[in-house]
Length: 484
Picture (tube, rainbow, N blue to C red):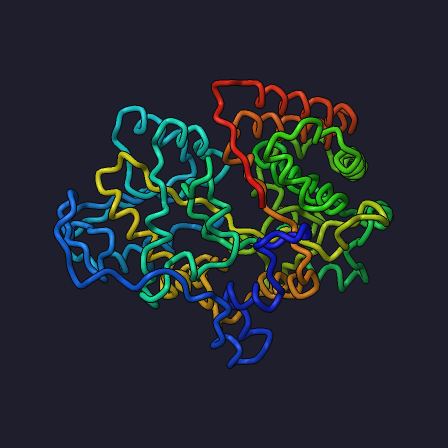
């Protein structure tokens, strides 16, 4: 995604909206016809060529040479996105193309526990949605040679327009967000916006507006508390990363996106910078308004309390609305607010939000049908596959134009409004979560310690700097680097 540092990935708001398929919704019905994507790459392959080792013939319609009768196993993380998009959209599209292929569908919320024994035993699926609290360590998998380099996918002809490569049909930054060791091993599919979520109907009833500064946040917290509503909360048991996302976003808004790039690159002293200390201190003040019991809750328990009108502001991404749809009262209207400004000198304005490609899909290198896994991802990245995903999951994908004309829910409509207000002020993504799992686990631990009042902001920064230094010094961990 674009950032304030002026990277090659910078795009205008209108370009961004075009590329995620929302132009028609904000600029009139015809605007979405003007694709902002570059036409790149080479033409589709010739009609046919010799069979590949997998047994399939390479053709324009089958660029990877998938064997038509090869079984395919798909493992889906069944969290906020559900798995109906796979069962009712992507798998049928694959079977339409390869009717003889038998698809095995596995849905689980325990990705690591389910699959790590299989990786150890050499019996791996062909495509995995590696997400959730219990995801596998993508960095470690890549280091062990377990992940397929997806360059072939991104360079393949698009299903919708074979004159374009797949990489030219997705939002800018999508391919790069899946890099490990300089190559794309992850296909990040969901275009998510992050911030503080609230019930706009409740706020309207109370006459409240989301706070724009942390001084306003503290005043708001007292107001909400006096009304018997917890001002801010998250689930410490399994979703501490929801809170550390907010801390990192605030630090980036203070200093600029280079801060997040430096965090990923384990730059010396990055966790001791003033921006980090100021952000940690600001959020620690808000943490004081949380009941200690929240540290023992999981995310759905906290989210249900918000649906019941007991919590005002909740940190999350734009999958939240769909995840809670069965628990959300009709009168509840999800809306997104940016993280408040910490200082008057913040480099990025209040309106800046984090909007990135997320939810990683991978193809194991030792799968029985890796070419089928690649073709499955290519189908996901078609407009039909992406539109169906949005209809089933309630989340927008990275595929250009796929959501044109779809009626947006209150939550997605508010994401649209937030992107409108943000313009080019987009907080960049983070990669350390996929690169350094042990470090990320430590960050969850220390985030809880900070937000539930066991350590100070300075102690938090010192402990995380020590964890970063330990990661950097560990020669058994392959170090990664990003420049944008």
